Length: 275
Image (tube, rainbow, N blue to C red; front, side, top):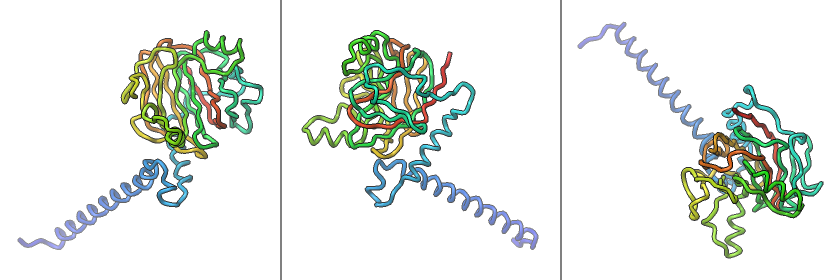
């Protein structure tokens, strides 16, 4: 079959368009891999010898963009929103938008008001290997009053969102302790209250394990988005939902930040209270 010059030109044009579309698709996939692969690696710097901090900060920014805290209802949490419970006067300090905690003594500070339904965004960074901390949601007034009145070290009753450095696992192994009962990537569990874990569950049946390992180690910032609504709590780590719990009882109480033995920084604390 013979083709006219016009038909051949049309075929060539269509083929060129197809090639351009495929080329664009390949570029998009390569860009996606460029951003995604470093995020999937738990410690990419150790594997490659190249610092991934710029890409880590890209991940933080992406997560913050996903949870648009500039929408109506969001506000900053500042020093005026918190009260001391059983910490010392120098346990917590604010400077240039960063809340620093010495880790001593084991204690918490709480919001001045109790909360029921809300969304919370918070970034955290451990400053030493194997650091331990946490965010308490719906901490009970009774346990808070007890800690306040006695002033002794301890933690309240409530739902804890774990903030644990990756080196904690190595520390436990070196001490000859088991490491299958926790992770360092966003466990959610009840402390002397009721909760049904969502998704992957720890060996004791009450601890919600994350579906992915996304937390970065000490010295790097991590991003948490916590959604607590109608007795259900869900956690996103660095932009991805990983763990949570439902049927929480009580489903109202104080929001607390935890000091537990190691220095840690918090920043970008923002909250949106919901009906």
